[in-house]
Length: 314
Image (cartoon, rainbow, N blue to C red):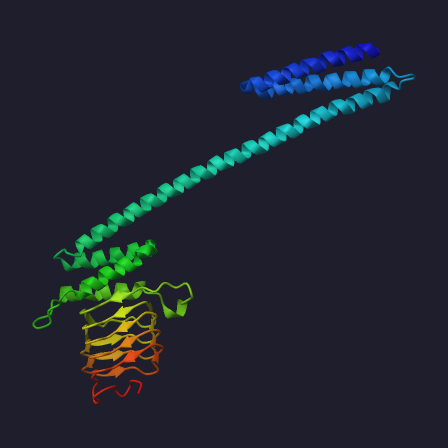
């Protein structure tokens, strides 16, 4: 009986080894061949170990078969571990492929979104030259939508709105009410896109406003965060408001003129605040203004005073 177990085990081990080598060479059918090799190796170990123990004096057949079974079970356990590791690696590869597919899909979606935004921006800028006022108003709202959907466009949209307001506006005769509505819309877009001081954090962006020579009416950027504010030679009509504005860059009011009321209480100027040649025809409120940088009022004229008005800091 001992030799029967040993011979059977040896043949099975040899057959298992050959099957395993074939499995390595033929990867297309490797899993089935490895299963067959595992079975043959298990049977071979069962036969060899049991036969070897049965060859001892006064063998215990039960213990011999039990030990042989443990050896065979060890091979099966190793095969199970290999299968589990292979499944894990396959799942990881599948997840990597899926993640790569999702990344590519996200990149394509982002590219499409950027392309659509670029097209909308270009079309809106083109429509600002349309003779119909309502078309220009719609174009400004489209620009505002582009800036909200793509924050990197915000400064560019603000530049476009400022450029529109810098365009000459004739007030010598009858005012073009349609054009006036377009300009008021541009001013509202600027105010809507600027961050609010109530929401200001160290990471809040500082957008610049270049309104050199602009014609403004009811311009209101109160409680807004601004980068550089340029109002050189600007004309401010009716009532305009900058109160509680936080200006992080230089502020230029050089040769600007306020034809109406200017509300600028509680403004914070972090850097230069230049009012040289500024002229106010009506009331100007500059109470509790904080000048944290150089300030100049040379040639500034306020109502009732040759220099600073009564609401201006002395």
